[in-house]
Image (cartoon, rainbow, N blue to C red; front, side, top):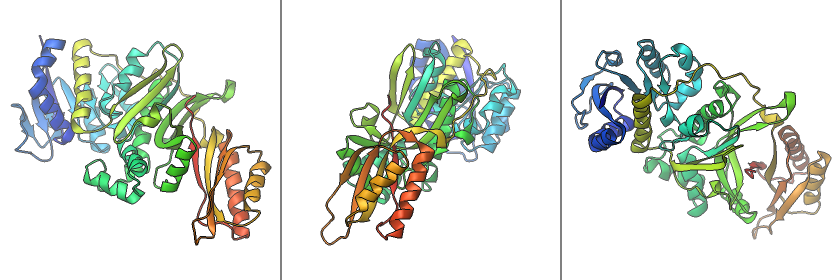
Length: 429
């Protein structure tokens, strides 16, 4: 029996989940793995008397975790600078680290993973909560050549879009309910503007395509502009709107590179990913040998994330798991302007002759082919109507120019009402 002594930084929901799992399932972990987990030290700014520390010594000084009676440090405090300093200090002291901190890995992972290459840094819990997606990419699917990793990787956005669709709630109401249920923070900006998902996609893209973590190269767009009308029209066209992170190989030869983007997308309603609802996360991986594989489960929550943290701990204890190093090679990240995809456009216009023709002509002028179109009757008493079109695949920069031209033309004839809504379409082929 191997005993592993843990030093835990933080006493938030994830740290409490770790303590709870060890208290409840410690015997099962020992029987299954041959590893006995013992918490020897806990460091946090605030002592929580109601939390059972399992006999560990408590301190308000994080440096107390770098002690002889700690074998592995669990960084569960969140944030960036303080967490980064703790991880660096632990690694320099030859102590393996397990973290659930996506932001610190996305921003400083390249530096941290090479600061002491002989000491493991594990971060399964940083992406998609309880879903073992990092283990799958680094171990289970390691013999594959990856083509695409696409995921719903932010539960808050997924809950809001599900509520808007299934409960017919406006965005503000769905967000407020998410906050009341604890799915969204009091300041939800990181979630609804896509930053949280961008951190996670940075990690997935780097691991899948053997590149450094490049947060600055991830295109980021949130869900604040999605309306009930967009969701309704998407359903009529056979799609559901999901907020997704997409990392995939694109281009050929010298133009080959990696697309890394986070944004809302229309997903075919019969696709597996389109049917992942509420706060659940899911990641679809496409590779040459294994084909398409789906990983789904709770993407957040103290117990779910704690489960992944302890999975990393046991993996380290059993095998001194493989250490990520600086073996990843620099690759070209494809600018969003070069991305090619189909598009959904909702164009609120005055209901008068010639407007639809002007829309169609503008698309034609930019060599954009229209696959489908919807024009509803105006609501009684209104002079405006939505024109909805779906384009064939076109380069992003061309689509942007066409939309800008259309805004200008409709504005000149005072035929528009509100801005044009544009959402990319992903068929996941």
